[in-house]
Image 1 (tube, rainbow, N blue to C red):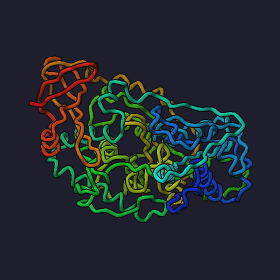
Image 2 (cartoon, rainbow, N blue to C red):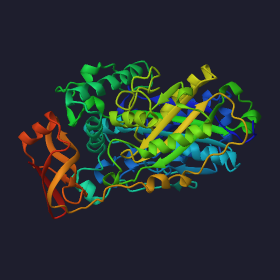
Image 3 (spheres, one colour):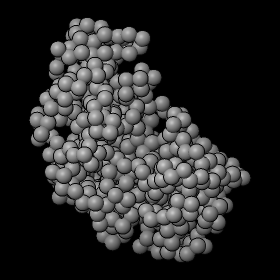
Image 4 (tube, rainbow, N blue to C red):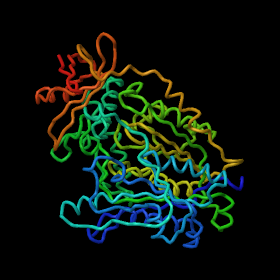
Length: 512
């Protein structure tokens, strides 16, 4: 092995379910608890802490939006990585606060692996968390908390990152995950030729397995096993969120969860006396973005970025799909899992489990940091089975940004090198998409759609359609007609024609 081959040497998780609101950890407190577990997992005690020269913090949800209603009124850590460092007694030279996206845990592991290989950094702690459950309970109970923290030292704040939707998209309802992922799901159903009833049960069967895994995971926040029929049947408790997703098929972010990973080089691991049995290697990785705006996608039933970036990870690792023993597909909604399976040509009923955590609706969806839990969950499995391989896919936005990692305890020979993601991003950027127009008029056809609900009652229809004459793509809402909403939920709408009009930047599609 090359001295500067990157290795993962520790992983930790922390879940806080039972707590007094006043004494509950703030977000960086949860990240620090997970970090302490990662330090213990490395096996040489707390002495490793003084060697941490870089801390990367996953961006928390309250810092991920410009919309004031999503802000937590208790203050914040102004320098999140140094807030974690202070709690664990570390004094890193470099402190990085990541940008927005569920892809970022894997993305930054890829980046840090490259920087370790280049001798740019030596020992890295990556940590993230959410304390949304505490914040919500405090606000509901009018409890005031003081989460304001100020820490000296440098901070490299990566900011929000790419804008994930346009003002036109957001005005029509795209840009909210629970209203956007159903657009992919309905397109998938139509492509597969399933009836609504068949498709609902198919989603239930997929996620039943996830709930079983979550039930046995001690770090799960919602670890209740649910049957396929239970998941796919709409009830007062399992109410509609946005068709075709009832409540239990949606990522659930009201959690208090944290996860952390420690990385270093083979040389540093040897110098520190870390048992080689602890070492996990990143054999392959890849990153790629879709055309970021949802209205510019090639279609709504595939993900060229998942296909390309997973292929690059497999090529780097010198492996095929058959070599993988463990998977964790990003699972915010069924469509994310199904599209990943489609792009990898993996059967949804493959006997290998598709998650090692239980997934975002059942394990919990801790903001941008979910995939850090998946990676931390892989470490003990790969150590116990040192010839096995695990694959993690991470997804940010609305199937927008993707990153992949392939891990194993099998030693990696030669110098660690990855192909720059920028070298293959153009494969996706150059794909042809339908021309999108903001002010359509005349006859159109539904390409995909959803019906958004509030407290179980339909309130908004979202349509992505094509104009009859030019085949241009457009975005619109439907009339707020209860009978129409009922029909849109009970009968296939893709391919249905209607009339679209535009007024003051908003479009209205009235089905024939």
